[in-house]
Image (tube, rainbow, N blue to C red):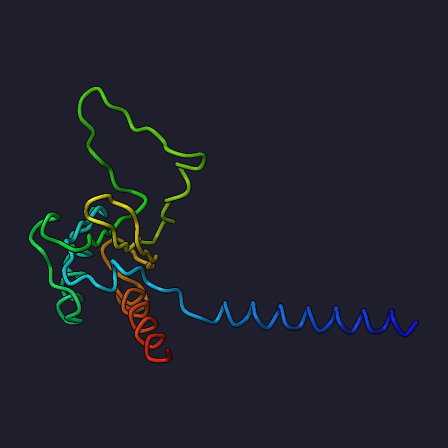
Length: 163
């Protein structure tokens, strides 16, 4: 009987420790990739169909002062992409859009009324960081277009200061 109680207490202690560890991991900010933290310039790509969002992004980038805006993808450290679920891409004659992967049509879907702000590798196009912002047409709802990006950098800087 005493061995059974000891086993229960050990299991309870183990569960408490695992929960505390999981909460600590969840509370820590996600780290930005090194390519993002070391970048100095971005090339802006607006696939939303709303030039107002590009104008807003340029104003916010200039006010923030963290990145310079590059004149071409080749001269940029990163690509800042604005996209929504309603953009259209032109394809060369004879080519058709093809899904890649099992969930290709839904994995990158942007919910209606939102804009995805993403930092991409300029050479590969791989997404290094992204955020969804609530938008209505060319207007940002609740805050600024680049709030998530600035918050990610603030969290990164705070986590570096603690080490």
